[in-house]
Image (cartoon, rainbow, N blue to C red; front, top):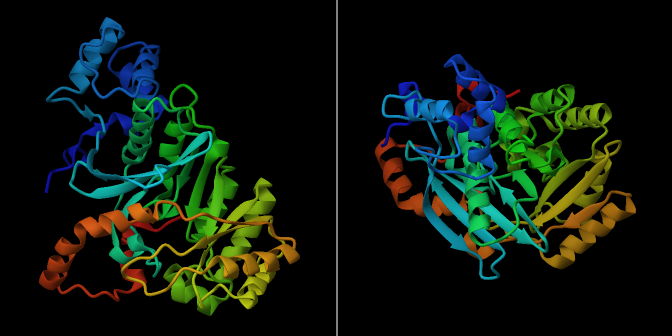
Length: 389
């Protein structure tokens, strides 16, 4: 497997906030103003190469050549494309990106009338183990660095620019991984992505999706982070939710909902709740009434999402009639909701699906060699040094 540059003490330019980059440039004896030129090249021009740029001042050019040279301490994140597929309607494109150490992650670009949304990954694999999610089924590999998250946004921006399209309008952290399990890294990446001197994506157009890491939700509130919050709920009873979302055993439903109420009070923001509709599992009017009761006192909007099928889960997507009836119950309880359109089914757009398809033969061989068990306990999937929140 290729060695990641960070393993030998190098740092990615894309890991650095503007301030951190400026500190490195100044520490080398250069003026802070030189930071602007490099930042513009990185995030406005989406540059791949930095050598011999005539627009760089001589001091900046010399610093870049030394810092990014063979013996330099910096490099630029540039994941390669392991696979790319487009949906038949032309609105969804999925990229399987290969990182420097050989791990692969997924990034999805979704087109809507007049706007584009990117869905990015924050981890390789996921420790949360949601039973219907392809990423949850594959287990946790490692956290991504800030630059590896930022690089996904740069990739889709380049893809849009190559087609003459407008840039991204929205960013959702709903791809592979649990963003709040990689909290500090995600916040650094979002600082870079929303910096108005570069990519300049509006913080209000960024949504962090979590399976329900209650301590980190409270931290988001305390730190007044300016991003949207979406919580994957899927069932409004402890027993039902734990069966679908093993993380509920670690952060019980009552703790999660209390954290959401605190978040709402402290930030004044509405929370989006994701509800994957599964036939005969959580799509009945009774389940809708349970949900309405659970969300009492929370400024909530519910996104109803028919299940994306995966090979590791036998459930079936609820039909439109069930979804409509479910929504009608919520409407009667004055809870706004949207029945979400399933996007990119023909390109395995559910998070982790494309990676799982590409890796299935290798995973089967590895399982035979290592004797790994499909039912590995949820708690064992967490690296001890990476406790979220």
